[in-house]
Amino acid sequence: MRHGRKSKRKRFDGQVILVYALIYSIVRFAIEFVRDDPRGDILGLTTLTGLSTSQMISLVVGIGAAVLLFIRWRRANTTADAKALVTSSAQA
Image (cartoon, rainbow, N blue to C red; front, side, top):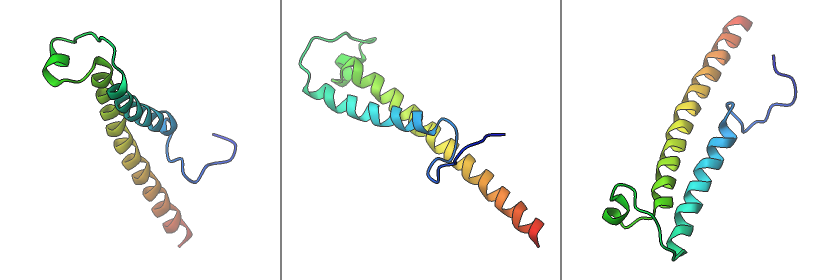
């Protein structure tokens, strides 16, 4: 059992790191437009898309973080709803 103060905003374990990964990937993607240095090419995708390697990685990380956030958030809300239902029926 966990002890300590529970945040009203935090819904599940790992939420903070997933939000950080999402925000970092967005910022990194934007910063890479300003940088003007030579970059590597991943399987020809960099040349094909016009995006840098770091932008491609940021897309993968950002999409992954967004998907995981969505899944975990829905699961946390479902669990919270189920607990509220059990609590309300136990009190009745």
